[in-house]
Image 1: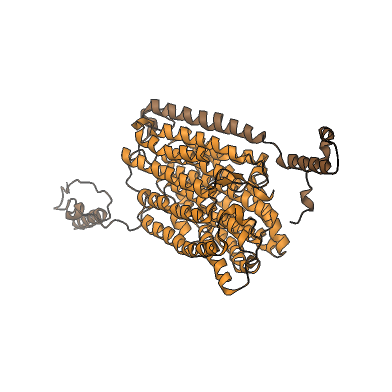
Image 2: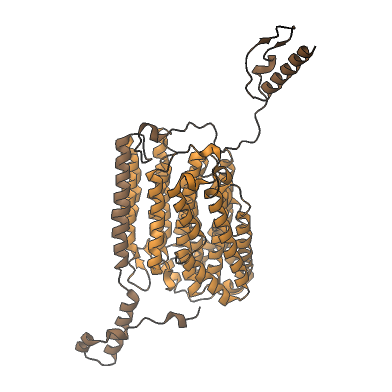
Length: 153
Length: 459
């Protein structure tokens, strides 16, 4: 009787396991001492409903591991040659050309506020009656940048 | 300007005529060269503006935004290469075409002289962005996101069209170069109050102002990486740029009409920063962070002082680079775990230490660590708002604290602690990803050495 009960419980357990989607062992066991049999339940093929919440926003994707075929992959393309050239192009044009030459260009941009002040000084001196030749000897330090901290915030 | 516009338009035939294995190399190369050419616009010898033609001009406000726009296209192309690798060739080319079309429209928007032309181009940028979000977004919610994005902006900007046509009738011209010499104050009347509202609401929705911001988390989250980058880095700044331009002709109404929007922005920055602390979705956190930062820009623009304008311009450029970098970092997580949930990809510092360094730098710039340009922008805004009203320092200080809190929360959740068992087999960082982060961070750090080029026309 115990063996019969054991068989019944086990069948129920297997059935419950199957409906919950947990893989159950597909073996059939027959007791040698009694007529108890443990076999996969008839509901083993029927899975329970899928959970309504999924933890991945983008499930069932086929992720391709670029490193598998090309251990030196840079992440641009599957083809190693295209991948290598894409990396070179990005580094050369992105860093060596744009960042280096661009930041040099920006660093060497003249200070237009200073040159505008100097021009204003020169024009003022000219209209005050200074001779044109004296414009060559203007005091460059006089073309000061206005103290911005004194301006209204 | 044609030296930038025509090469950008020609990127489209370049894409379609390139061989299959050369599309990304060609487009990335030429878009980097276009960004190099755009740096010449930073040379602003005149006190006024560089006038290229009757249709295009650039001044110290639009030049940095233009350089940011042209710099962002190659970065968007690099970021998109992985998720498009399985798409058919035609769809890859279509995607690049959409990005290029958006780039062209943005360049023309930032350099348009005429306000109606600016309006048409401002609206036209919605079309390629909508296509990118709804066609290449990953989840079904992208359709709803596209609808919110389109209709919020359209509803806000239709009154602007009416207002602009009305002003054109009144003044005879809507040219930016002439408007700055328009000394006539708007008479105080109800119709001019509505005119003020009509002019400003489009840009308030675009920024977005807290209360009109519901489209932003949806659009940013559902968009693919290039869509998120361009939305956060450039499209939000269209609103700031528009406000900076249009407020020159809306005086004296701005001095009293701005109050409700100032209050909404000051309160909204606290609310959105606080919401960031409760987010589980990484992209959503970064999206709400954008709303908070743009609220600072709205405050700065509405206060209308020289320092606040400097702060607004600096903050727009700084936030553009930082926010774009944060989205790229979030995307690098997403490509590995296929989930945006922060706690699912935690403890990454052990697995990807170099990427953790980029996360650290991006989080530190996001919380405006000195001496980054983010701090320069925020500090100018905080100081000018303190000068406008002393009490705002409480809200600004609270916002800065909460910004630091959520930036560090994001960093600690994704990088620190023990990694979960299901991510111990993720792929190491690609050179592409590290190059992308470096190309975001290097200009940001270089600008900290020479911020005067991004301080706008009141410097």
